[in-house]
Length: 95
Length: 495
Picture 1: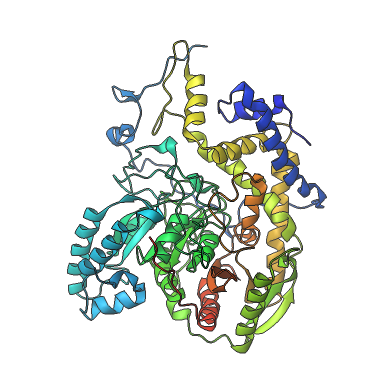
Picture 2: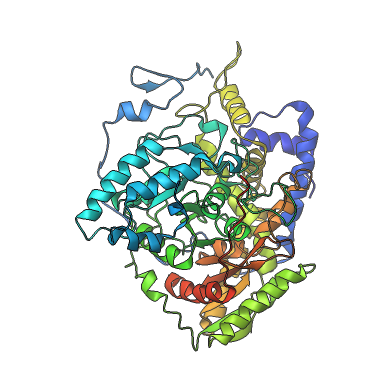
């Protein structure tokens, strides 16, 4: 399946990556090439085959649901581009 | 400057204990080599002061006796590992000046055992690439060059800086990570040993995530024995990584006995590619002969779904990457785009990521978002996961026949020139992983061992794929290839 400009625009939006209008055509072509490559998978008979989500031979371990860490506000905010009064700061969000 | 930096971990371990050298001397020699290595662009962050401080402590620990094997050994660390208060950027602009407040489990185990950090090593951005050319720092350069040429070659990727640094003796060994071949391909391109352990053997905690179901850290070293020593130092269960296996870690070094009599080595016919260079074919045959001469039984095996491994990988890895890289949004760390008037949080996300990610990362994140999106999830992502089941089953079937390890080429060619792939289709670059990617999909251990030189005088590697959790046996077989190939060559120092 080839990817058109609108689908490329949608993929860019889903990925939250700004792509200038004039580059969308080129992006669509690139993505089409990659998706075409993936389409070899359509040749495989996967009827009745379970998807593999983990190669580990064990179930994920569980632990008691208890707080094990915390009170590290300064450390957590240290690398933030903007923080105020113990919070991450972001531009105004208005819906 | 002495030549101390040229020794192996095993040699240093002996010399340190015999008091023939100190860690301070060894570290100083490495720092000197690093200083001279600008042209290789292997180190993106240098930490000589920290290294000197650690070396002093290591010497104290050594003088008390009973120091761990890695005590006093100077290492390079791939930039993908979080190192406390030291830039850890995954070679990406989006993590500019990111200084973690914590240390990855792998590196903290190394420092606890007295190992020395010389600095952070160059890599492809977020480990996405096969030539180190997607790095924000520019590519690491291979210390090897073609006979009679001074053209700069790739050190491979994504652990290109690690490979270049080990091959050029800019450290005794380095950490790498491998999602589709990122330890083994650069190791093959630079004539060193690289091990991708069984998935779950080494904790992923504190390693910047690319594709969590495939990522695994491992050693890149000058010899097979060094890889065994290094792997022992970083393996084992970690409460902070729920996928790390709660298994006892065997002594990998002790498993290298050099005795492989009666072992069954599989040669998979599907790895014989159309158009594969004769020299790769010959290298592979030589490898099989060496193992046969050492008493192993060579058997033909079939891994019928091999052809579908790369397309499955290029669905699954980008899908996981698109989720993992969602965290780079300009809020908690790294780069944030400067907003124009009237712009809000949506523009902040999209422009931050557009400015902060390089082209290959953007491409993969968008592909990942696409294959996970409504309407395509079943057709691509779900199908790729089912194909992954079949690929793993291929290996399970071969191992159930009593095969102990599988021998393949490590890469389809020797190192190529920097810039040579620039105008190629991205898929052509992806083909570098054709022999290695199956191993990640199946969660198996794999090792790349230098096994000869190409007609142009460049290193070529062979890959051994082991049974799950049998890294020791895999390294034992690898030691036969290492001895048989007598690969003790080093690149001529031009840098």
